[in-house]
Image (cartoon, rainbow, N blue to C red; front, side, top):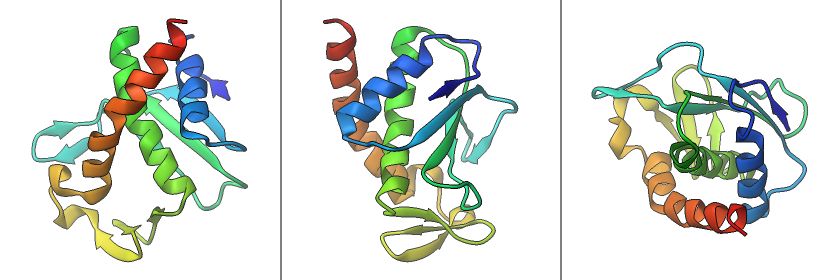
Length: 139
């Protein structure tokens, strides 16, 4: 785990989240978001994950905006679900603007943000992960 963000506590949240998801043997780097990323339909990314096929092994980069601890737990819970999706290869990069979801290659520019199946799943699952992270950190 490498935390290059201006928020020193983010690596702890990510570590607890990965443990809660049972994800081992991955490397995550956390950095402050460098530019505002437009997700379409007036959505702006609070954070996003990059998982590049040229990286060796299971390495991920999370870009995230600044915020309160509670806000960061919520946002990172969502992003950690995406790491789980990549880690299990349910979600994979394809070429250009395409991602592979459950074996189907989809053009992300043709699917509104709130209709993307990987986002729907992340929004459904992340509240439970958020709760687990908070319970662990408040012990």
